[in-house]
Image (cartoon, rainbow over all chains, first blue to last red; front, side, top):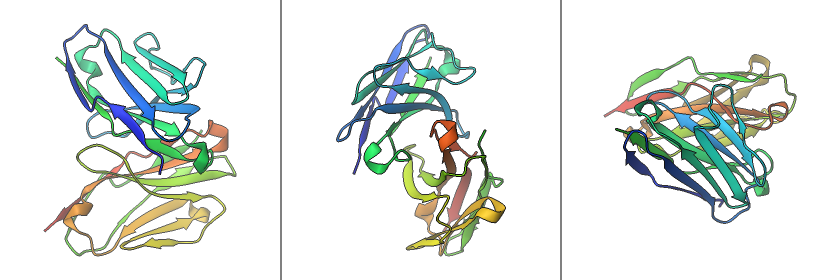
Length: 117
Length: 115
């Protein structure tokens, strides 16, 4: 089946530094990828939707200059958390749409647990 | 706008009990899909089921069963003879064609199965 590889799985960084999270579709082309954030004991909240070759669409309240999304190829999307602060500590998870499963086919990465100290 | 409500935030049962997780949704779309995911402590999302709005047949897969009632906008999930390994957070989600096909998640239900 469709597989999405997300890494790193865990990262600890110092406040003020930037962190890049990668999300790769391994056996299918993902024209659309979604990035979610999940705080402890809360649900997944959509941060942004990215389509290959175009700018990402951010949800209300998500700072696009802080959370940089690049979807330069059909198999790779990256999320860069710039100038990270402790309040950015969260679980980030990507999802790719696999058109082979139809427009409602979503495959999730395994998530990245970010801790900013 | 679409919305998913999982009224039960936490459920605790003893092994071998049956348990039903409730999910109620709102959407203006006529075409939509409903999903259930399991999130164990490790964090990854495990896909359980996808059901389209035109298929109201109930589904059974092993100890899992789903009851889709369009009339009440509900898509409930039952685990029969629960096991400790079923302990996880379960999310119900909705994707409709007028919402850009993005997934909207419910708040999740934390299920604890005690031995």
